[in-house]
Image (cartoon, rainbow, N blue to C red; front, side, top):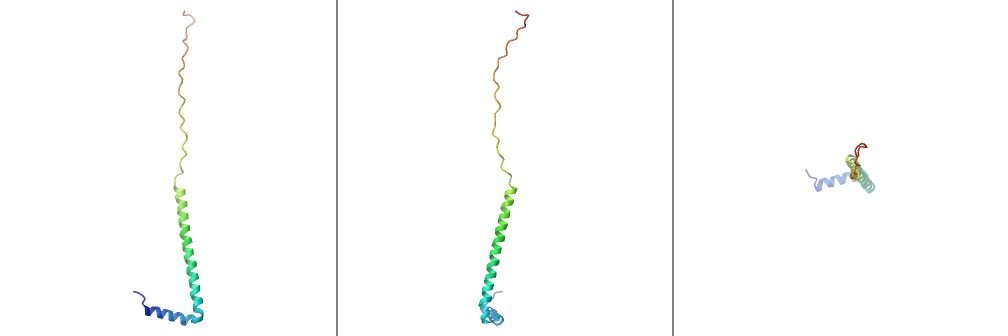
Length: 90
């Protein structure tokens, strides 16, 4: 079902009869403003959704782990043990 030129002419005629020729430009201007406001509100809602989703991704993402510097244990130094001689041995 499509709107043909005859249907559009009937709709325009109804607007002229309802609003009058003098009020028709004001009505069209008002409808244009309303459409612009509606469009900007829809865009703002879309931006809010995108910001919310970005925040959720940031919250849900695991925090990057801070890598601790790897410290190697000190290497044991070779210590020579004194040779214990028993005082009675000589």
